[in-house]
Image: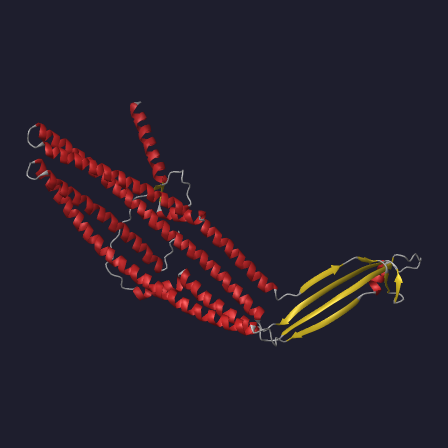
Length: 444
């Protein structure tokens, strides 16, 4: 019976452990959640729908416009009798109807260029969504690794505090045996207090980092968020050999570069639209109209009916309109020049964007290689100081070194472990950034 209960208990503990592990969020989960819940991303998606409507509107401008109308009016006093064409004191009822349509035939290709301009706007809207998502992913990644870093520091601070308390206990026993002075106990108590303060500080930093991560994810502040602190193993790179290939890939795929190209395209099309305003405008229009009239003072039995007037008073027309922009206070010329200048500015902005991206890529590659070297040295340093600290602890227990020397050794070892964690996390960050430039997406 006891054996069965033990098995059940172990099974329950295993299940609870699995549930707890499942609650820890990975980096990909945090990024995916942030992208889905981000108001900024949702805003850009709505903005993209506005660009879609602009495009549909530009296409519809090629279609004919059709309108219909009617009115009902009465007049009193002296007015012209349509039947006799003379002025009479009478009351009249007038009810006209009209249906008209117009179709643009030529506008200097401005409508065609406007369609292409709006189409480029749609593409730029998509790239803006990608840019906002990628920037959010980078921010979440930074906040996530900040959280992992401070959690690791909390673990180190807890271990350091436990060790300091053990050393305080050992020193107290030595003092009771008369093997050390009371000043050593005071020194160890101060060390325990300092380690306790450091633990509280690191816990506060950890709490603030999780708050920042929740903010970026748009995660409920009153809900717990546990992140996975397991860091992937890697072999650090100390040099980047294919930098030019990375640049080429990045400049052809990054949303910022694509947006910059599309802005040049839009500016060029706006310039062509402005040039189209110098050409004549040709349109075709036509319509049909009819009218119903009644003299309200005439009670004759032979009044014409509504249906007969509606049919007999009908008329049609077709018109071809041609207009030349001869002079409009230089507004067309000014518009052409302004669009040309804007086109030049967009090309300069594009070059500035490319230069910045190239600098960022080179810096990221250099940071990755440098951080790889730092990580290798940090590993060596942490290992050496760990061994040294173990030796110093034994020396202290044997009375060969002082409390101050032991504390110095302990602080050096703690700092080396913190440097190792920091260099490892920095390397993972830079590696993901360089992979992003290589074309590997940040968003799962």
